[in-house]
Length: 315
Image (cartoon, rainbow, N blue to C red):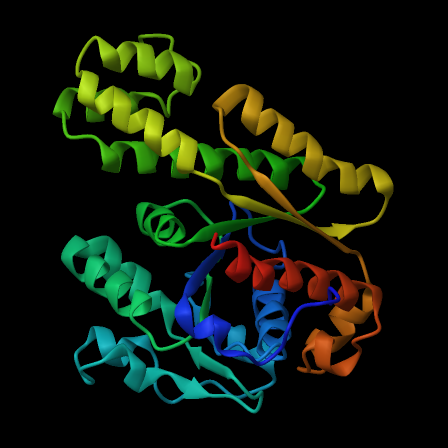
C-alpha cells in the first residue's frame, strides 16, 4: 500500500463511495477483483459492502470462502424484508459485508424501472463507507444503469481482442445511455438511440458531431450533453497481463477512448497473470489473505490503494 495513507480514521465516514465493476465479457476476473479489492479496502479501516449483481450466477461468496447466504436480494425484491440492509450478511473478514442474489435483481429491474430505481436508491443508502458492485458480463439496460449509478464505474478487460472489443462496446453503450438520460427532447433521445448503429443515417461518429446535430434541435440539451461528456470518467483495470505489451494495452484503450469518443478513461492499473490466483479460487480462499506476497495480490493492493486515496481527493 502507498506510504503515508492513514488507516482506520474517521475520514471515510464523511463520504460514501460506490464502485461498480463491469465489462462486456465474462471470465475477465471481475468477481475475483471485487472480492480481493474489497478485502484490501477493509484492511484500511474502510467499511465495505460487496454486492453480487452477476446475472450469469451469483458466486461472490465463493471468492470469500463462505457458503451461499440464506438471505439474498430476492428477499428484498419480493418484499419479505422491508430494508436492503436486512439482507446484508457479515463475513469472516472484519469490515466486510455481503449482499447476493443478483439474478432476481436484474431480471426484476429489467421488468420494472420503478423497482430498479428503488434498488439503486437502497444500495446508495446502505450504511457502508465503500460499496463494490460486481455487475457481471453484458451490456443490458439494467447493467448499464447500475454501472452508471456509481461514483466510478470500473471496467475489467483482459488482453484479448474479444475482451477489448466488448469493452469498447460497453463503454459506448454506457456513454450514450448516460447522455440519453440527461436530455429532455424526445427527438434528441431518438437521435442518441440511433448512434448505437455505426451506419446511422446522419453519419454521426463521435460526441463532437452529436453536439453539433443536437444544437440544431435543442440548445439546452446540447449543453447538457457537453456537461455529461466532461464529467463521464470511467476507470479501467487490465487483468491477466503477461507482458509489457499487454500492460500497454490499457494506455492504448485510454487514448482510443479520448480520440474517438471524447471519453476521459482513467487507467487504474493492471493485474499480472499469476497461477496463485486460480489456486486461491480452487481453495476458496481470497488471494490477498492467503498469499499477500504474490504478484497478483500486490497488484490488487496497489489498485485498492488508489481507490482509497480517492476519498482524500474527493473524487
